[in-house]
Image 1 (cartoon, one colour):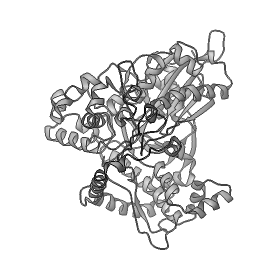
Image 2 (image 1 turned 120 degrees about the horizontal axis):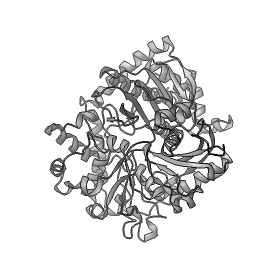
Image 3 (image 1 turned 180 degrees about the horizontal axis):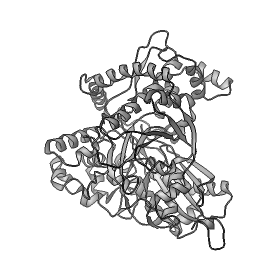
Length: 584
């Protein structure tokens, strides 16, 4: 099953599309061994200040600047991952590309691409290169919060049956809120758009020439429950022009996870160096596809994929309504089980922000002199502290709160700073805040009858041993890491093997190809007790600022938005940022 007729090996390619780069890995079908990898950084990274001059400016005129809370990307950067990272992975593995039998991809979600009927992104259509709404809206685009608020209020008022499946709140990150924002802020672009497509499905479309909507994003991000979307009447009540959003822009054939969406086209074969006609798996989400890579396919095995943000996924045998969850979907991770998702909008992003803007030059210089990265240096300093020694509590809401409050108008805070507070103190407090956020999610699951039995971590942050021990101590759970540096890409490769017919289903492929556990962290009793006291303070702040007791964060956002809108028009159209400035 896993070798050719002449006994030679079969291989599959998994491609993981992250926030800043795409990573490809070559995996042996027989046992899941990772043989080679390639990485390609998106040239335009995340666009938050102005459309890149080399794309928008190429059409003439000044590249438009963006309001706050926007996060866009350039879709051609995703094609370039196929052109660069996949050939690099094949070269690194040293295999014959003819032995590759399938390719699969995963993506950050909810990341949306407005396209024409043939899949052409709207920003590539003449006349639209300088219109922000024509670009990819990245998962962390939070400018549709007002639209999300209206969706939530109307759904609660009408008692929509799908609302409890999402913990009672729809996120501004998801398909409907972002689509409604596009309609209301650029109706011309909305009219020109033929399909509102998840990037997870768009990249598969680029590979095989078929547009197939994957079951994972449809369920978690597209309000697709029990075989239907929100009704036309509901959408018309939000905005009469939004009535046919599902039928005209969104609805499409839905593919099961692990199925083949189609087969590699000649054009995509030329990009990747892979054989034309190999299986291309139905798209998937980076977090959900990691569960089989970690062999976490049974109920109660919580997988936290920790990178710029964290997504928590877990299977359950029964349907439960969990407040503040990102969704529960029948077969959303594994066929025959209910897939639960929660998450934190900012984790590694928060640590990166602090090291960039909150750490003085002398710390960077000391780290360089010691031959260490700034994160490694601060971690070393922070690891020598006793729990609570810094006197701080932080809220990990610098990119809003995904779970359990589902409110991207919330913001970060650090309480307890004095003139003696040092960067390593704040750094450790931020590490701890993200762990407290995860504990809040674990307790929400438990309190709703979905117990967490195992805690498994994948993603780039598992390399920080202090952070992993903090998470174990804060949650009181034994924590194991996945024994792969490319968990999502390995998960995609597992799905590619199933799509190519090498395994009967994802469960069987996971058993054969999934990664062995990596490092294991056990909670230290005295640390657990110390963090219990700090967690009580975290929860006090969490509820005070996040549950309506005090609206100061919302008021500050409103003031910020009003201040930006009141600027003179010419101040919003200054010289565009260069590609180098945006990337920096």
